[in-house]
Length: 206
Image (cartoon, rainbow, N blue to C red; front, side, top):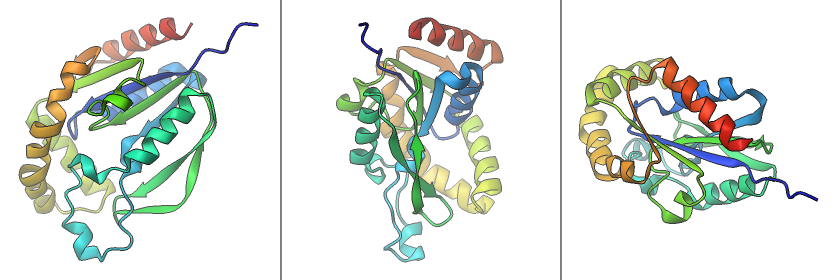
């Protein structure tokens, strides 16, 4: 009997506002029922035990803000073809929501996040590693649009955080990961790029 093929894990990495979530969403649409999606954003450590004032002072653009143990377990479950439970994070309160989401096994698992390629133990799990290179001004404009609309932030606060924390952390921890990528994409990403990439993934999972 032929052994069942392990799911293909795909890492999508880049700076904040580079278009990671957008690319993951577009690829999932192209791949249809064969693909599932996870975001590193849901693996931020729970801060519900801290006061709102202390939560606001945390540097969420540093890799230590992530629950790496939980992420590694979820990815191991995915590779083994097991259903797994994924935490859900609320950025407005900087805490985890009650309950988890169940992720069922799929041939392709898309994972987007800032630092997926920094740890060798995680990096080895990804059959495809994508890095998005995006200009700073474009990333800032996208982050402003996202945080003002969906995270209840004020413009001055978002702008201040970007230049004080986001961009310095991007230079220190995100940019260097491009060296471990199999595929380097320049932003803004074209629809033809997405279609070509989806075709490559289909061929790989056949």
